[in-house]
Image (tube, rainbow, N blue to C red; front, side):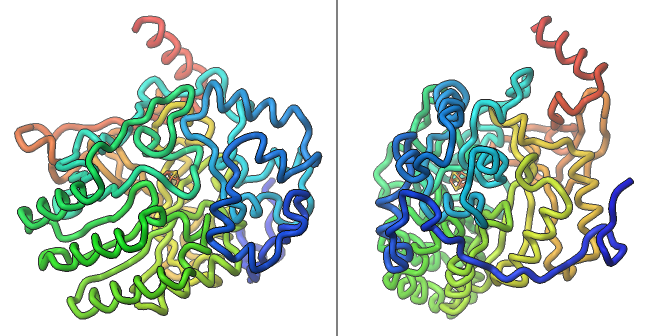
Length: 453
Ligand code: SF4
């Protein structure tokens, strides 16, 4: 029987103040000062990019078999290369000196530093998994500009981030190539790419909302980013601008630099004068990522005039896929960091991600179990990004074959590649549950499909 907390409710809220984990518990950072830690430049220079650098930080806290496991993953399975700012690494096993077992079990380690034994050996990938699972590249109307929804575009300004997440949905484009994935490359010079975006927006006044992303906008040199944003603000039909940056949690030091703060203030003042909603969207998956520095950076964004800071997390097994994990994170975001819990996306159907993905019925259950605890406006929606459809709330499916793990969805608009498709709005689109979560009859059915293919 499920044990209930003391108050007799399935979830018991307790305020938890944010704490910056003590980085000197790691042998490699024993002498790092607060001034160094809070410097964006120190953080970037000391990012962990390979096993040797990880060993230098962890010393002999972790057994050799962990490093071997990590190396196997990097060589055979990883779709993203390793890139961890010290700030992120420091949120793994935050309250004690890590050892091999606690490091293996850590939720942030599980998605930022995946190892081979994390993955499912039987079904590492779903047969329908693809590199560009949301077909964003197919919907480019200019290099890096995806027009998927009628009134909105996604602008990918660059293909790098200050940190690389193992489950990155843009693994097709973002980051360095890995032994298993040769990445797509942006070919235009940044200035030409940005001009092409602005030209498209001027020519398409029906597009009113621009998500400025990448990669992560924290890697765009500030002057370039400010020029781009001022360009967007000069297009009178653009009414919403959302900046996407996981660095708010992974490298909050970036958003606290004087030139960035001052520049963002200029952009926010211009947005305010023109009546444009300027917001920042970040990507936090676990409450342990929230530290006082993250909260300071989020509040600084609000102080300089950004209208809202919102979180779009990704739902992942082993990381946050329990009601307690999600509510702890949401209360930390909402109550301690000034960040609105906005969405949790189901992890997309990219290669080698099956161990992270959850089935739709499970996501529906989590959404059900989260209701009623948070303020209504801060209760996040769990969404499934259905290929060729877009975001759907997880209860919006029209049919569901639980045995084979296939859900069916409809949509109410055409993407930029379906203007001539007469059936786009009447047909059903499929989404697939992870095969290891199916009953044996369903798993057997998929095995036969593979043999027959
Ligand atoms: S920060 Fe976002 S774009 Fe960058 S690797 Fe992580 S998920 Fe991908």
